[in-house]
Image (tube, rainbow, N blue to C red; front, side, top):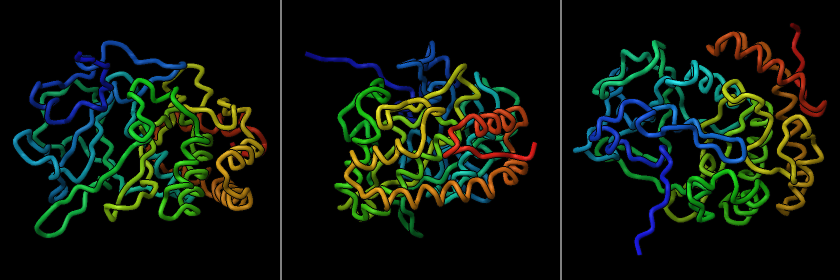
Length: 319
């Protein structure tokens, strides 16, 4: 028998979107997909694989090899204001405290070429992130294999918030990574940064393993880090459980210690890393935020979020 399962908008290949002239997210998703009071921004933001040349970005045509695209371009959202500015700013803050972030840019919409007609808000910028699953030389472009954790756990896209927890992801990383100490520290750091940046969308599909040498897995660079709480009313939660807790404002260092115990990694390896993240965030983020392009009302909500966190994770500002 043929069994059909729902497909997440992010699973639809760019070539099909282009061929079908899908230009409005409402054509893909009639209503927000909610699971455990969550939803994915994939349904409300168009994403294209594009080729960069001379400062401009050109959409890879359906008749061309999909390997040609070396950047992912995310256009403004038709439902939520200034998502590209949000994501660029949050990824920049993450990078500042040691999160492995690919090259990112804000790109003027006028520099995007060959797009289908788009029904988008009058916002100036799209968000661009360099593809880390491509390796280019002067003559060729090769695909680097990656697996997100929905694939690893055999979960359908609609199960990305409910199938497992951060302990189980950590166990996979710690058991199979080619550099398990570095990668489990990086994973723990990203968990903490997601709390600090009020990102409730770090679900299974937003974590991946990458096979740079085609044989051994490593934790991939970070992607899709943004402050979701400015778009979701009463957003208070992680995407998955962390030591049986999902509430940002109840999270404290002891939850990470319990997480480390479940994963099987020595707490001293994680504790030192988390304190380094907090020291760096407290010292540089408040000033750095002033100069980032995130809109003022979102910046203020982030500062309010910092103040409401447990003292272990609070970031105090002068305002």
